[in-house]
Length: 171
Image: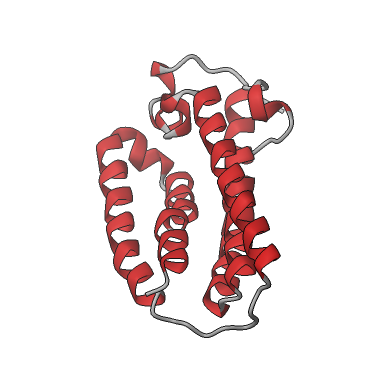
């Protein structure tokens, strides 16, 4: 089993799907936020098994040189720090979607501090780049497919989220 494939798919895979479900069924989730978190947990559990299955897919598109493996590892670690910085800037109630589900319980304001000063969606950007770095660091075909999946779904998430934020804050 390839641990890079497993952890990349298991950690990142459910994120765009959960976010798309959040925005598509936002009215339902706002009436019952616990159901949203239960659904999200269900997706993470299912991705555990999906990631485990995909981790056995050892088709290699290319064999990366050692310098590329090291560079990709540094990128992945750095990008996880960007995600942590995003969480610390937003605070957990915003980062983990509580501000969207129960917006009346959290002061609504546009965040333009920390990494949000430089990126509109730093964590989303990090997820996509991590997926591509995992591919380039391993050369595994399944990670190229996964990175492509991530970029497509994260673009949909960003469009849905920007629409929802513009409704909350105005253009």
